[in-house]
Amino acid sequence: MESIELLTYFVLAVFVGFEVVSKVSSTLHTPLMSGANAIHGIILVGAVVVAGHADSTWKLILALLAVLLATVNLVGGFVVTDRMLEMFGGNKKKSSEGAAS
View 1 (tube, one colour):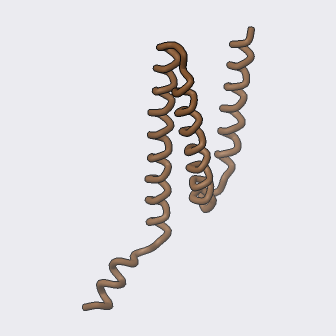
View 2: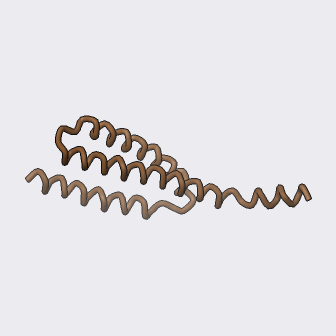
View 3: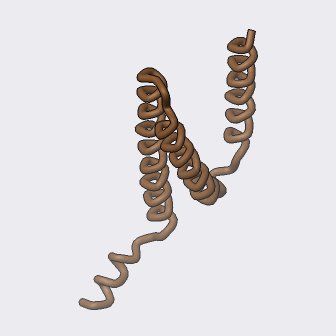
């Protein structure tokens, strides 16, 4: 019974998350990504703590998988945020090269 309850919470969280994120305008995505990167860092720390307290092989494998996925998510979030900030930055390199010539 407990697994059905947890699955219900997960499905509801997916629907709520999708609705919340889909309603955000494109100009707010960069600040939200920065906040999400902070949350992903906390998730990574939690996954490392869980991996440190694993008492069976299966729990350790799942915890290390969580660490790997959290790390990929964190690094990917920073890469996407950096690319988005470059898009809003304009052509600073071209303007400084033209002034020097």
